[in-house]
Image (tube, rainbow, N blue to C red; front, top):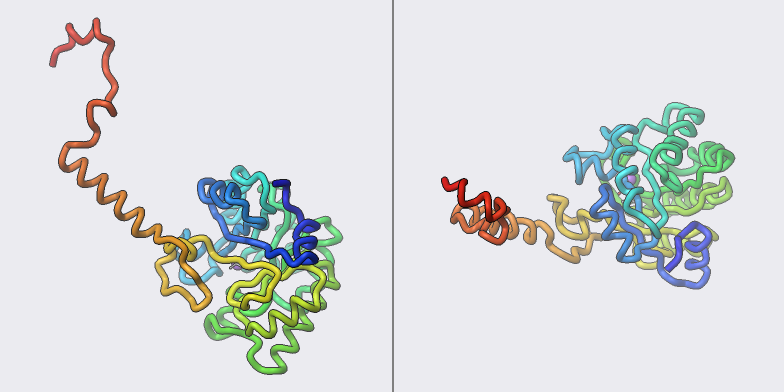
Length: 277
Ligand code: KIV
Ligand code: NA
């Protein structure tokens, strides 16, 4: 099917067809995700944790994000490619945020950037939109705010906090956001935001009423080495699959059954005779 863009995502919302999204961080996985037909691929800063082994998303740099985004870009033909703005890249000034966002489009071929935060990000969303950079916002449990939140905790659980999330979402849409990720919030709050916005909502730990869903690829296939969160559903056990493959390889090397004759190269016949060991 044809190339995805934010217009086609909004059409999906309007016709109540669910949007599928996943993260990807490298060429091989991005190809598989794109060829499977997922609508949106996020080069998430979750790569700090699942690819680089940090215990939060905070340490990953612009250059590291660009490196992964370029690999994903080379793989993806159909899905819309969104790059996560890393912590610190849009928190110092609007001008720096716009300059860093533009790098994802210029240097990595991303089609949009994602930023975390509520109404405080409205001015940045306006300026990015003015600069022709589509923006995906991210509300609720925003992992870059781990220290302010005091851990990875579901947000919007009081009436006041729930109302604030709804207001934030409406303001970000008015500022020009193209879509919004809703993470770690009560189902009821995500449902209210989804029904009030014209742009698509993409949920993770935000219940089934969002316009779409996103998961971290490594969580989906059990490669993340962390106790899965309540909202994760594991669809395959790649850790077990890979371990079995590695053990098979080691066994065959140690048994001298790999490589075998059919997996070996040979001298031409006429040379073999005068090349006896
Ligand atoms: O970095 C990430 O993977 C994300 C998604 C979970 C939305 O921000
Ligand atoms: Na992220």
